[in-house]
Length: 107
Image (cartoon, rainbow, N blue to C red; front, side, top):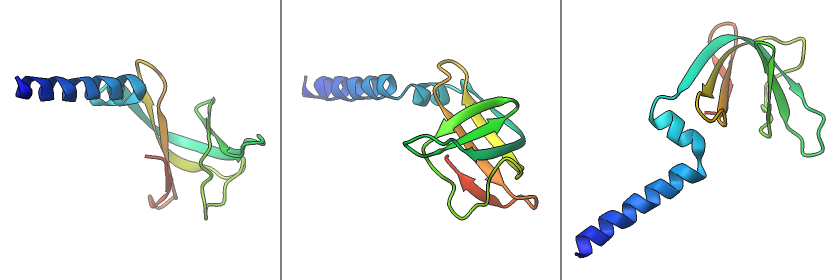
């Protein structure tokens, strides 16, 4: 009986985690897509700080500011962007230099 209670507790913890973090559910079941292409990052001028990633005419706001990377509307990067398919809650990106070196990543 105690074993059944422990298994049930673990199951409930996993369900709570999946509900609390929807993009985890999407990624666990391969409900995401990855796209590559050129992008640029600009300061989003908000009071909280952060940057806006522009990729294929779509914009995504992030609180993380790339450190030690020169960015702005005139600086293009090769980007890998991961988007969740179902809930569209998770967006991660990786900025790469021309030679393929990773400069910044939110993964």
